[in-house]
Image 1 (cartoon, rainbow, N blue to C red):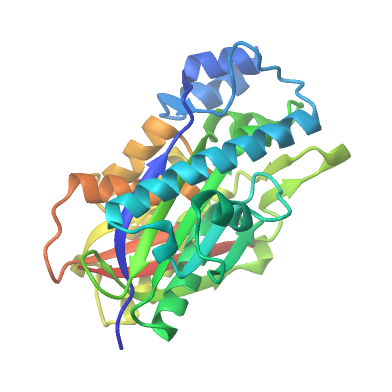
Image 2 (cartoon, rainbow, N blue to C red; image 1 turned 135 degrees about the vertical axis):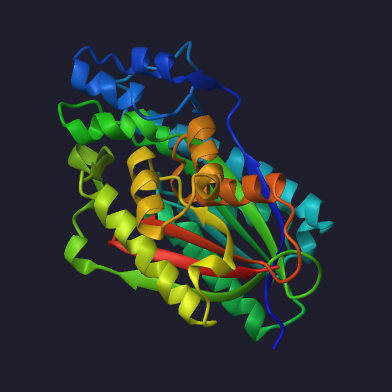
Length: 341
């Protein structure tokens, strides 16, 4: 059976990039504990879809939603067009589109808007994965892979667009301050086909830990999005990355030393630190996840595609080498894919 392959990867970020110190000033925190979330994040700067000249911490719900809409469509279209260009495709060549976002709501959904903006065929099949957090793009990737296995020879596009700055609530909760210190805006897309170059997606797996259902997600007090971010995530996330790696390797009878590339979600400094320990990895093996965190912050579901893009840009894989992609999201869930070049 033909195996889906990642033909191209592309990323897009807003025009305004802010140093971490600038964002701390915009947030207005004065106490040492909350300021420490920014200084210890190992994030140098982040791209946010805001105008620094007009941004206000007390932005209205309507203003945040309007900004989410503009940003998700603008960045999503940019990432999609770059991925299509890298693959050598036209929008009408795409048979299946999967889109993801969790930082805002659109009805019609993101996929419907992009089908029109890109000029895709009227009979394109599509799915939108919403409210699935940072793991959403891995769910979309799984749906696209299933489609291509069912219809070999067709082409798919998976897109994530996240405007985390549109889920901003200034309150007294420590977890809100943590969220404001790490989350950022960005979009990323991958083109997939059963023919051509690129790593093959050999297997997908999902792991749920419902006992941690309340550890991460969103609440909506007064209609405003507010991040739920338990301090236990650093421990839960690392453990689940380890469990997912074992499940994926078992599908092919692999051991840890067989895995050359580790494409891990850049959830935060402590999650990466603990995942490195749990997976018994070298610093070099988590370098790309750290680079993305340092340069971009955590862009929710788009982040892992930034790590994949960084891996492909910096490495020179050869035929037969293995890689793992692992994302984390609310539920509590780990989503993984086993790659082979």
